[in-house]
Length: 250
Length: 334
Image (cartoon, rainbow over all chains, first blue to last red):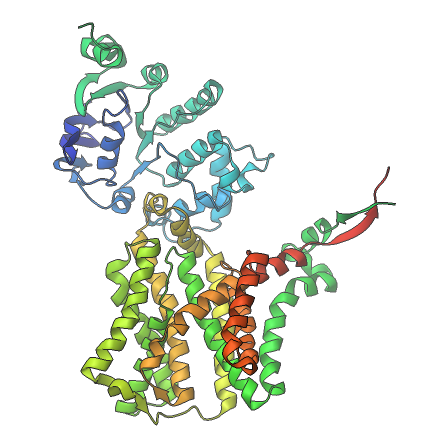
């Protein structure tokens, strides 16, 4: 891949008081790639995503997207450039029916800009999107208030909210956590479909098996530092990665 | 023989949806009745009431507007304890323009509505990031500060206020203009809150991070909601200034902040209609209890507590539920 990277994370650091959550992390991401970010609990995966998406301000370093320095921009401005994310702890609009949850991202200036002003019936588009991520239309789940939906549907809803923004880069923060194997198996094809559609994806995951299977490249974090960056097979065999996950003998 | 209630509302709900409602008079009345009722009531009430109760009706309209203003803010994630700020700002703006520049009330009232909205929004702009009780505290403090500033600097008439302002041409105009404004605000803002725009405001209340994550600038939307809400409150203040022909420090009184909240609690929040219904109950009740003298507040308070305990959802939500719930008694088979 010789083209300029879509996203460049350069020497990115964040400290919360005395805790160095992310320390000089550097990696690139090219268009159409699926990058997996893995690491033990507290290794700085979610903080890295929060830094990229502007939800947390960086202490130092920079995030460059499509050649533009977006370090510490406001989250809504970053979204408008085409970076959408899901949250590890799902953040639906609990008081609204599922399909109305999708109307809010459809109202976004990003979408208005892409479709050119008038949108038409957002509800119909929202229902279609929900069907795509696995809300069976016959079961009327899409009309249920989000607060009564089970975790599996909330995760799908979170994914649909990100897709609704028609992003170029989608960041999935532990989308599979709390889901059954069958549910994970039903969501993977949706992610693969997004890749076929030309989207670039960053996936933070604890389920290593799934990440190693579908990711083109994997980045490993430990104690806020990047300890490995490469194709799945290479990373799997990396001694430092094994040590981070299994601990060392001494 | 034992009996139980059976729900039979499915039919009418399906029949009265969308264009199907036009198929029969019954469905049309079912749908339009609740909307026509306030229109008819507001058109007829000034005609049948005496002078004293017409004034009370005017008060109902003013507190109804303040309650709508509070409910718009609450639905957009801003809990306010300072509706008096909006009311007082509108009152002083229109009073000052009338007194110093000699403008007619028909110009000062609309101008004060917009000016009040702009000034209040600007004042609260720096604290838009605050949530819950922190935002509420600031809205409570600002009107109190303004009162002291007016008192200490003696601007705008100081403690004496400005009197001798131009009244509206007749009490009919006073009544109908304020009731028309109340209905316009009620129906207009209900429509707005039901639109996709309103959905974004409700989304901010539900989960502001998620709205941010949709590429929407929540502070811009909150500022817009704040402007709409404060403009409604400022209109109420501007109106009352010309009714009383006076503006002074009492316009920032706590009553204008607390009574609208009580109205929303009694009527039911989140619908705007509940806010208006609450004002239609509480203001006349407060007047009717005047005969009790010192015990008035005790009875008034007891009534409030009774409603909060017995009908926490609010009267409007209770009535709506019952209105859409058709039941008949059927015998239980053994």
